[in-house]
Amino acid sequence: MSTDLDWFKSSYSSGQGGECVEVALSWTKSSYSGSQGGECLEAALTPTTIHIRDSKNPTAPVLEVAPTTWSTFLKSL
Image 1 (cartoon, rainbow, N blue to C red):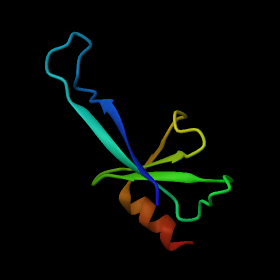
Image 2 (image 1 turned 180 degrees about the horizontal axis):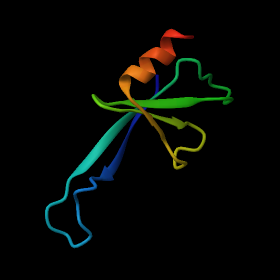
Image 3 (image 1 turned 45 degrees about the vertical axis):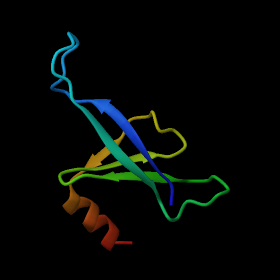
Image 4 (image 1 turned 120 degrees about the horizontal axis):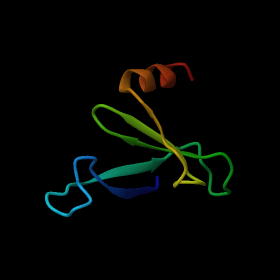
C-alpha cells in the first residue's frame, strides 16, 4: 500500500502572510492497483469528506464525496 502526504494551505489563510494553516491529506493507493500501471485511483479519508483522485494524474481535479456516499459505493462492489 502506497501512502504520501499532500500539503495545501487552508482556505482561511490569506495571501498577506499572517495566520496560516496547512493541511495534509494522506493518499492511499487502491489495493486493485497493480505494479504494472493501469487504471488506478487513490483516496484520502477525512471525517467529513472522502477525496478521490487519479493516481496517474495527481494534480488533476479531485472528486469529493461524503463518507456515507463512499460507504454505499463500496457496498455495491
